[in-house]
Image (cartoon, rainbow, N blue to C red):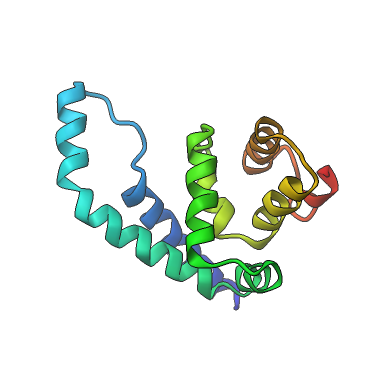
Length: 142
């Protein structure tokens, strides 16, 4: 995939991230609840499209193949990271970005196999997505 293909994919992923888990908006809780309820169908659609893009990515596809992962496994990883508090950073949605990129996805799987605790995994991923760990060196954190 060339530069423009990568850029187009990134824009699509970020747009879908904002539909799946919109950044916190100011306003009353009732207003926020109404906005979430109104977007519920779009959320499911956006999540399905996001997972399609993840599965189509060559690096993610290679990790999925080598680790025997399914689409449901990607969802479980996402939900686990989200439940642990991994959300929006200055560089996008960390939990969603993790399942859309081979290096952090592989990191999560290897860390779990090595018995690394969830808090340490989340902390390392936050450092990665906030730019404190360089791309290409995440697996060295294990």
